[in-house]
Length: 225
Image 1 (cartoon, one colour):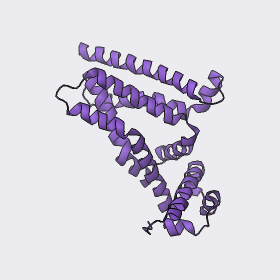
Image 2 (cartoon, helix red, strand yellow):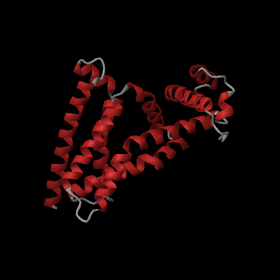
Image 3 (cartoon, one colour):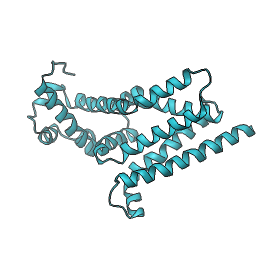
Image 4 (cartoon, helix red, strand yellow):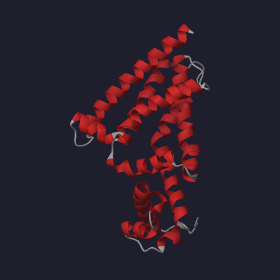
């Protein structure tokens, strides 16, 4: 990848290309053309090899942008989880609250139209993974998934390394992802035209209720074992 030092103008051009590339790659994958990406960004096609080296390098740059974006929005939750587990006796109420906040943050991000291209990009990578997914997975998705699993396990008294616990955590996260991947279904079923602040708040209330039911149910089952 090109490592040419960036000026303010250069950073702007680079950001415009990444935004355009996310839209095009999200829609067409690597079949997207550099010509269309450059046109959407309002840049000369030569700007892509100048700033990134190749279309494949631009694709990886988009993956890195996504990793940085996710990291920025979830860093407070990760730090809070690390602080909880560093304490001698982690507080269960604090664990529950942290799970709620992390899920509410995820709901907020996944109901915004501004993150739609990001979701399309990642959805393609989930179904047909490339090096780009490995980059995002190892940098942010796996660590966040582990923190989520650890919180769920610590609260319910389960083994965090158990495949079953990992699946429980993944299923819980999947409830939130359904509002992005099944966006059109819930809009039509609920008679909504879009996700606004009121509707996002309602989704958060329902997911919070589900989290508590799952935490209570898994804790009860653990006590029975």
